[in-house]
Image (cartoon, rainbow, N blue to C red; front, top):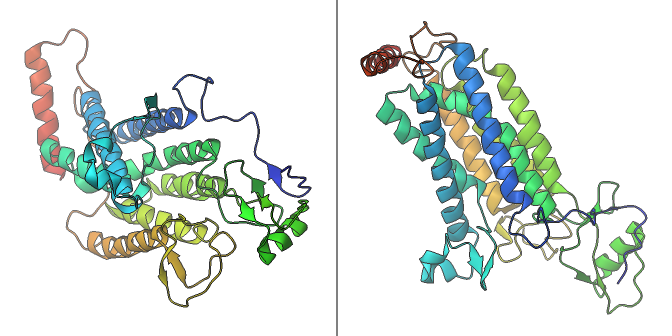
Length: 355
């Protein structure tokens, strides 16, 4: 059925998940690469502007283990929390199998919260091994990665997934792969009429406009939150402050944006303080909470706890610029192996002294 919508914006017909039709290269994967590259550059900028005792090899290692932890955590968490068919519990080797029916599809289904846990784990272990100050490492990390998150949500938008609830307002957009709803439901027919969509019969299935919640998240959880943290990076009152600012800010932004998103149809609301019969696509009651909202509320609690703990820890004064350390960015051309080893020892001593 044709949508004769006069109010909502149509999803761009030229926007396809594949970069080149027919080839297994998708915009979503490219967005991840852009996000990782941008985060790396922003982290390196902080290392250089603060003269932080970290070589290029150290920085590469930090990002390698952080990204590896992120991908493993995001995928495993997604299959455990959001997958209800139990297929991955029966066949766990399929968790990282990028093919379906002989066709390359990539790893479909990644969880932000799982990726966060995995990234924290990988970076924490690396910081312990390399004797970095963990609070400073994570402060610089959250000031770097959040802008990259914007591109992940843009990838979701290009895929036409994770769209929001139905709306008849000016922010509505018709996503071609959104679930069509039966016009037998009175509220569906009413919404279609308000949106200017012709419904030929009560038996018709209607694709109603929805909130582009992916773009809301890209703006608030990505650009705006990153800008707040970035402006605070050299004004933080103590080490670890940016960590609690990031967790609390992200949790708060996404908790409220979840009211615009439609929860997964097979999960629905995990908590309903006041039971109701409204369709999740139609409305998100104030006292009904999705899986994402529960996890985000946990992030807010963690941020508050970290705020009170970190501000009481010893050595809380933020060191904005470190003393100069020879060869802090790696080996200089022409240096001998003995000189390189001496430079590495100097960096390790400085890290221990400043922890």
